[in-house]
Image (cartoon, rainbow, N blue to C red):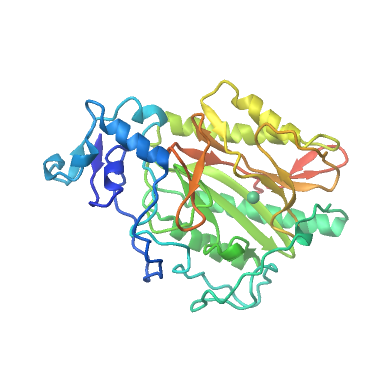
Amino acid sequence: MKSRILSSSPLSSFRTLTTKARNAARPLPRTLPRRPANARTLQVPSRLTCRRLSSGSRAGTPNPANSDSEQALDADGDAEYAPSEHDLRFGYYDIILPSEPVVWGTAHILPRPVPAHIPRPPYVPEHFGPGADEEMAVAEEDAETRRRKLVTGAEEVGRLRRAAQLAADVLKFAGTLVQAGRTTDEIDAAVHELVIACGAYPSPLLYKGFPKSCCTSVNNIVTHGIPDDRPLQDDDIVNIDITVYLDGFHGDTSKTFVVGPEVDDKGRELVQITEAALEAGIAACGPGKPFKGIGRAIHELLKGKDYSVSPQFSGHGIGREFHRQPWILHHLNDEPGEMQPGDCFTIEPAIIQGTDPHGWTFPDGWTVSTENCARAAQAEHMVYITDTGAEVLTRPSI
Ligand SMILES: [Co+2]
């Protein structure tokens, strides 16, 4: 087991205790960001600090205080490190941490341009592109647009279906791009091009300021990872979350991909149980069925297993709005409400290794990691309630 020491930053001692340190430092932003004067101090969640200190005090593990010692390095600059049983609990994988130096927000990331003829959802300004700055305030959806609404009538349902189908097909395409050595930003660029070529708008782009056209969440990232220049590795898992806005409707779906042959059994099992959790949630859907049945079904599936479901993120109603009621909780809950024909919503459980589902948000304001750096996977489909059952709109057609 090798652990590469990257720098003498405050995080380097933590890195030496990860089961597998990153092979390369995350890249610096292309342009120098503005950041607050106190931006040099990264707030590492307390649990990480605890783990770092307690692990370091055990025999056989490196002492964080010595982690920058040259003596620990071999000819390649790698440090030999035998992981403890505690560290192996979640398997072998890279832990994704915020880029260094720490950058607050996403103002330094330029959005890819979208041709003027592509209709934008209402939250996106009519004109944007390179050179746009913070003054390009993004209009937030108001409470009215978040109301629960039904999608009925052949015309509307047809549009909803086409948006969902496009999202599914784009996700499938994105999956074919997942391979070691390719960066998530390259995947984002290809997704962006395809969505536009299909006459649609990539919904995440500038949604509340999100700077990319899809979300890519690697290993310990629970959700909302921002595509970047880190090359995927053979032992990564990566969730790609695609949403498109086509003909006035959003289509939203995601899946976690196993990047290469080096992904360990624990990673593969996590991906499988996440798919199973999504299917369990779908099976609980139908006209007259309670929304809380979705959370119960996922709870039953995970009961007694060493996994937990993130209570931090919910599924959502979808249609002309990206996110609206009903909010779909994936954990055990007692929310009122029943599904009715015309309801369309996502189910998108994020499943986490171990029994601690706490997450923390990176300084970019979007990326959410597990607090203890356990891996997380997510899978998402759009479900449409008909008179007789529940239809999944985001199965790929090709
Ligand atoms: Co969603």
